[in-house]
Image (cartoon, rainbow, N blue to C red; front, side, top):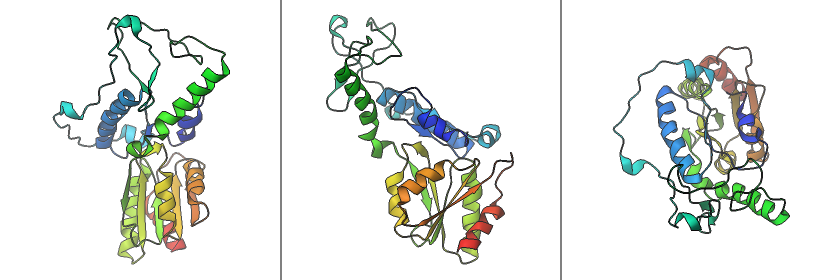
Length: 259
């Protein structure tokens, strides 16, 4: 999946906001699945879980807590009678339409084409532009609610390793080992790849010298990191595409080289 992170964002036939989680453990696979269903219900769109091959084949203990119904998100249901239901009319407060379930007595037209509020295809430029901008806006306006990330030891860090998925585990160990050696290393992990935590990375780049980005691809998310950093810190890609995993000592060697 680390070779598909750009496909997750840009691989569809249309422009729209995307929500994508990248778990780093088997436990988190369960946790982000709950979050993904909640996000899909709230924002009325598909949500992706990018668990890479390593996480997908890993065996770990998982704690499955008792589900509190109050933590589950229910889609907004229509309040109009079926005859007055407009299926894609957004609520002006949040740009999100109500969503009836199949079999509830509400009917609407479904198409893969750009459509109007009734669901029927349209060639009206104003309707098309309105629809496209709403699909982007409904994610952008809730960006801060959606974005998740983890940090460790970044307050005084001069070198930060930014990693996601399975690579984050080796990276965190490397950061711990670097700290033992007296190197001011830190760790940043995007839990959501999309929306990308660019604002948080930009803030981080203002106080560190180097951001190392190890990935199991030829360099994809590093492009987003470079965009967020705006040249305020050095961004160093470290890539592995031979089917093997990153070892902590490999990432540690890079930390020591730039520290």
